[in-house]
Image: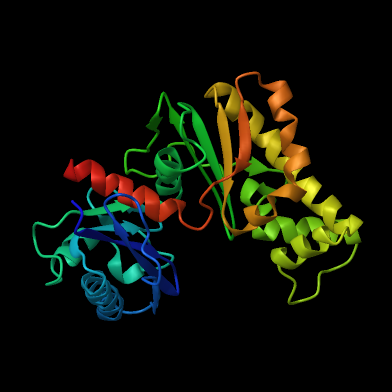
Length: 303
C-alpha cells in the first residue's frame, strides 16, 4: 500500500479544494489545490471544474511518487451518498438527479474500477476524528460544526448514524427555535445576531465572526457576552440529544470553533449535568477532519 495515493475533495459552492493523502493517513504537504467552480453553472462547466481537479490531483500524486488509487468527495446535500446521485436544486441545479459517481468514473484518470466514495462533510469529520483525532477511544460521539451553517452528526456504539441517503441521521440546523430555526441563532448569522443584540445596534457591514473572536481575545466584554449567549443556546439545545444518545465525547468543528474558548464556559457545565459526557473540545483536526474521514472510508473499501 506504500505507493498508493488518494485524492480527497471538498466541494463548496465557489471552489473545490483537494489534497493528496497516503494510505497510512498522511495528508501530503504542498499538495493542496483549489479550483473555482460555479455551482450555478451549466453541467458542462461544473464537469470541467471536477475534471481539472482530478487531472491536477493525479499529476500531483505522481509527482510525489504515488499512484492514484482512490477518490473521496465531501459533497453538500441533498445528495444520495450511497449511490452518488445529487438532489440539490438550490445550487448545483444542473446536476439534479445526475449520478456524480458515474461522472467521476468517466474521467480517464479514474476509470471504471477505481474506488470513488461520497460523504456529507459532517459525517466525514466524525469519521476522521474517530480514526485520527480527539474521538479515538469513544463509542458515542457527537460533532457540531459551526460555520455558514450548523451541522450535527453522531455515533452509537462506534457506528455513525446515517439517514437513508447517507447524510446525518439527526439534523439540527432546521429545528424550530424562537422565531426561526436553530441555525439562525447558532451559526455565522447567529453569532453576528448575538453581537448586534448585545451592542443594541446594527453591526458594521464588514464585520465577521472571526473579528468578534479577535475582540474576545482582547477582553472585549460585549464580544465575550455575545459568544456566551450563543454557547448557552447550543448547550440548551444539545443537552437532550446528548442525553438521548448517551454521548461521551462532544466535539466542535467549523471555522467558528477556532474561537471555541470563548463559548466553552457556556458548554462546559454539560459535563456536570450529564455524567456519561467525559470530553468536550474542538476537533483535533479542525481543518483536516473531513478529508481524513474520506480517507478512512476509502481504506475500509481497500482492506
